[in-house]
Image (cartoon, rainbow, N blue to C red; front, side, top):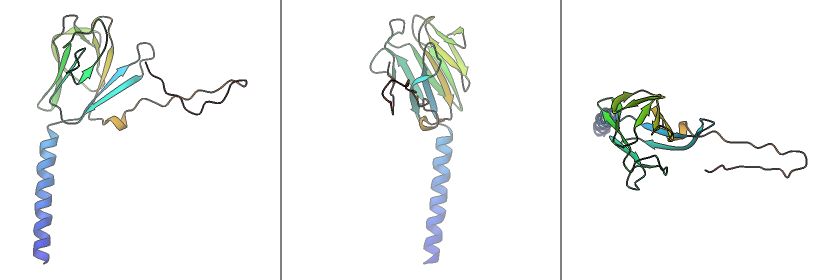
Length: 155
């Protein structure tokens, strides 16, 4: 009986090693749409195992942004080995940290701007959505106002 138990432990260890090796090639990527003035996250998407993420106005993209300056298929984020790269596929351009790019590797914390005056998306590598959620907003009422216990801001 103990031999069978030991065999199950070995098989479980091999399985976990194989899954870990497979998942090591798929790093979690989290994208945060930043508020245009406050530069704080207003919407967050997390992709634990997607090798390509498409961003644009078209509804068949993984990230859909409704802005006149955003192309239907504006950009792709592609995983190449253990790194991510941005590939511009739109007509109005993609900017990484203020510089127009057609294709380049991106680092954790990079800010992508879709078009010259379009929305900003911050990239976080290896961060799950629950670890990088927009901060809760607390509104303090004035003395003559009714107390507000929770507030949800939507754009």
